[in-house]
Amino acid sequence: MINDILGWLTDPANGDDILKRLLEHLQYVFLATLVAAAVAIPAGLWVGHTGRGKFAVVNISGFARAIPTLGLLFFIVLWLGPSLNGDLAFLLPSLVVLVVLAIPPILAGTYAGIDEVDPAARDAARGMGMRGWQVLFRVEVPCALPLIFSGLRSALLQVVATATIAATVGLGGLGRFLIDGLAVRDYPQMASGAVLVAALALFIDLVVAVVQRLTVSRGVTGRFRTRRGRAAAGGTDETGPTRSSTTSTSTTTSTTTSTTTTTTVGPVS
View (cartoon, rainbow, N blue to C red):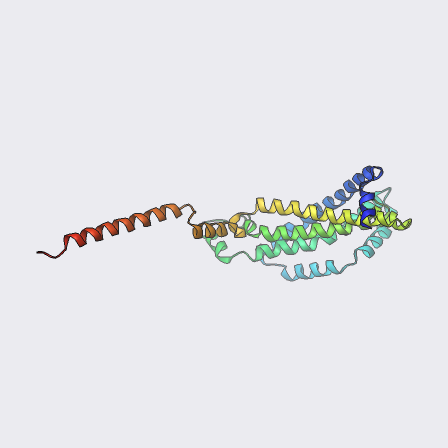
């Protein structure tokens, strides 16, 4: 089977189709994730900052995760399809389903990140004269970025995997290989489609992880403290050489003074 998958993926006849389906899949993923982030991040910031609506956030997130995506897709297609024309009759329901799927992890991650900010940091910011929105964007959001990115990465992985259902209503994407392969019992094509979906999910997660590492402050993630700890242990931090030199100088001076004192205060003959 592995040889069949490699043969199908490397077949020049499939190259253009793979690129086309990959671009379609990315279009569905990024459109749905952007809409979900535009809804979930502001809502999570407001709930986490004000403390209002915590119960609603928990319940909405749990309820949305329990909805069967394929059943919801068919329901929306039957409901909105007759009033829409062309591919929009299937594209809009698919995007709605993916947005509903992506909102809970982003909302939960944003709310949890803001809610878990150290109260002492908030009090210090208010003591410096910052207003509510300044505390939110200058203190709380930078501290909450790791959890916000965590929710975003979780949403992207779920959307990449679930966007394959768009092919069940006649749309494109990598799910097309699964549906078309199943129709003609072409198992190498089906397996190759699954491999492409998994590879795309891993690649997107890696890209977001790199962006997170470049964006989030080292002081928030603990990388700065870890580096300083290692440097201090090895005597190579910024103040390490100075301290070592000072210690050596003090030791040498002390030894010289001790020798001089011993020589001067010797027994008088």
